[in-house]
Amino acid sequence: MPGVTLSRWTMSYFALALLCLMGALALMAGGFGYPAADVAAPQTLFLVHLVALGWLSLLLCGALFQFVPVLIARPLHSDRLPLPTLLCLAGGLALLLCGFLHLAGWPGPRAVLPLGGALLVLGFALAIYNLARTLWVAPSLGLPASFVAVGLTCLAATALLGFVFTLFFGGVSSAPWVAALTAEGLPVHAVAGLGGWLTLTAMGVSYRLLAMFMLAPELEGWSTRAALWLGSAALTIITVGGVAAIAVGYGPDWALAAGGLLALAALSLYGRDIARLYSARKRRVIELNSRMAGVALVHLAATAVLAVALIAGGTLGRHVGALVFLTAFGWLTGLGLAKLYKIVAFLTWLECYGPVLGKVETPRVQDLVAEPKAAPWFWLYFGATDFLVLMLLAEAPGLARIGAAAMLLAVAAIARQLLRIRRLADVRQAARLPRGVSRPRLLILTVPQA
Amino acid sequence: MTTFVDVDVRPTLRAGGEPFGEIMAAVNTLPPGQGLRLLATFKPLPLFSVLGSKGFTHEEREIGGGDWEVLFAPPGSASDAVEAPKPATSATDASKWPAPAREMDNRDLDPPEPMVRILAATEQMQQGEVLSALLCREPMFLLPELAKRGHGWRGGFDDDGTTYRIHIRVGGAVDAAQ
Image (cartoon, rainbow over all chains, first blue to last red; front, side, top):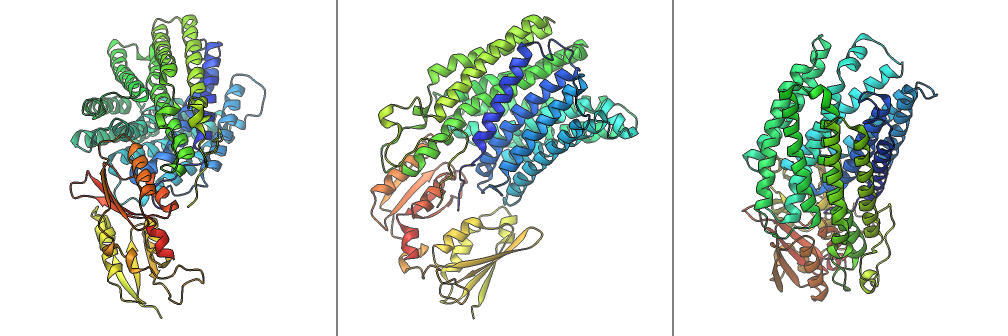
């Protein structure tokens, strides 16, 4: 069938992702892991992976299965693979988290950590295979999809490095190169994951989604190309250069510094592009999702400024937790929640009303959402995130936990709004279920057949 | 025995071009009983339904290097399955579509408003009439809905690369199969 159909399991990815996010915030507020515990404690590793894999990676995978086909105007290679992919990722994450608990002194077999790592590698390999085969058949990729392709390469690097760490901590291998990579490779793993996989992919998708929803011209100019090349070069230097440096006995610091400079240049160009996108938009009054994506983008800029300030002040080591937190929550989570609010509404609308459009009177996409009810919770989310980052910088972990509790409240309220969208609860009752329309299932999108 | 005319669109695709016009031109000049052997750099899924609606059956195979060979057998040839669609009527020949009965410019509308307007219009139009619409991007979510409703369509970007022009023939795909 020509065109793009709905991706059946995308809502399941989103639902599990939101549960992981709320779980992580609840643990943080309850004093489990950072900031109550040390940034390198096993409990913190538990939290970090619950957020990076459970929340951000599942969210992004679910979104990519739906939107990579839109980026390149070709159908997804396999509609069957997303379910086994989800099962591998969820199972792998559960085992990995058990492994971290074991490192923290909880009873259990040591092997769960490498087993979890292996299952995660398998899950991500399935996701990468499906998306790469989809991208492969496109006659030309276009810039947004090229960002995604580089992001997927970084995902492979991140997952493989993480797997090597689990081999060491799980007692499977203590070969010198495994020990050296584990001892010195953590920054490379973190930057490849947060900067390469999550940030580059989010940048690529945001170029297209923001242009689409604000009626702005597509950007294909030199600055976008330069942002792609500089970002790719930065990640190549950090991952390939960093690992090579560790292999020959140098630390990865020079690679991180050189890559960091290139990444800063890439982010500046991206910021310039996005500012142009917002100002060149034809749609003057923009929806809540685009306004909140703007707030997340400001947080990305703040992340870059904070990184420079901490490096210049020589306090990066002391405040690296605050920097990672701002990246994961101010930028990535902020953008993720903002776009979820639009994507869930759009996919639900298409699923329910697409088949009867033009035949009966149907609600508009915006009739599925209640922006005045959702907006305060987004502001609470960003306000609480900023408060928490400031408290981390002020080294006041007790107050930071209050910030985490406020973030949890905001995310739970936003999740409730998403649930209301799936249930068509904010659509006027008379217009909700016209003839031929049935109520959507919560976790599975009904895919119409030709 | 069906003979096949070769159409190799790999150079066009590798140059970043859109081979649809080239393929349809070849299809429209095929003598009765002759098939088309297409060589492409990917499995041309959209073509299967387009040519399927004109009565062609297809057999595809990967020929290495990511390239694909697809044999489109003409209606009524030996390789046709029993249930294969009958030959397309002349009315479904793309070169003979009637002039558009309705035209709309949807370039400045928020998504998914263009899709809403197009589907609403097709519901009001008569069988066989053609709707012409301008869009600011390829309507990825509209195309499956058109296929599902049995409408034929042809579309592509104008030379400026920013306006997508689509022609939709109401019931076009259904006509072809009858």
